[in-house]
Image (cartoon, rainbow, N blue to C red; front, side, top):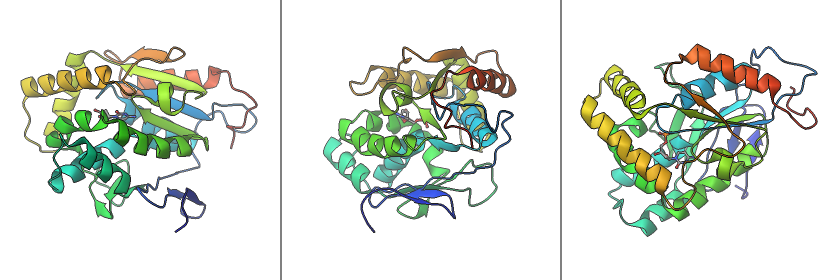
Amino acid sequence: MPHGVAYNHTERFFCFSCAAIQLVWDAGGTFPRGGGVARPLTIAIDGPAASGKSTVGGLLAQRMGYLYFDTGAMYRAVTWEALQRGVDIADEEAVSRLARMLRIDIVKPARSDGRQYTVLADGEDVTWEIRRPEVDRYVSPVSAYAEVRRALTEQQRRIGERGQVVMVGRDIGTVVLPDAELKIYLDASTEVRARRRYLELLERGEESDSEKTLDAMKRRDQIDSHREVAPLKVAEDAVRIDTDNLGVDEVLDVLEKLVEEAPVEGGGGNP
Ligand code: DC
């Protein structure tokens, strides 16, 4: 396979040659502002764990007919595979090598069990495994490694630059797509986010403890916000939304308003 990105128009996914990733692109959304009205081509949504980024990011992308790309799934896939293969998480070089070599595919949901997409690591379905507490525990140190970030950021940027994308993560507005036409920073208090994560784990039948979940959340926040490379922070030109007292529909309403009002160049975001 040639090196670089290939976009498969029939199946609507992207494909890379190595450390590859394929992405779902479900066009034909129902976003109210269609033909003729300019919309932002690239939408970056950043924020801490369990701030609601994935849920509202996925729904917004669906409504707009844009690609939804959850970049955290890539860091999680590398972490899960490192744990599976007995790679020492403290061994930066070994983890970085794995990040460069691992083929990560994010494709249309293979089954309807609540998943937004299917994540494949070297062909194996790891969609739910990457959500396990041990991945939660180790993903922050893994994502702090400069070479891991370099390998994954490169792929994320190439996809983002093609436009019509809602990209979700920690450094999308600051590093991956600094020129994104709309930048959102979703936030919520640590307690509210820990509670959401705790309920999520219970719902999936995972063993969970509210105190431990809160401690783990604090630990991750600390690493994600204080790492040297691409730390979690609010981009200067981002709109910050506090979701403590907002439901999913209310956050979506705010986002749709921001999309409508975002100043965009040209108007190439119209399908
Ligand atoms: O959003 P999430 O919880 O699935 O992200 C998992 C981890 O990946 C998180 O601890 C930080 C890291 N991450 C990152 O560093 N940069 C991104 N763009 C996305 C996620």
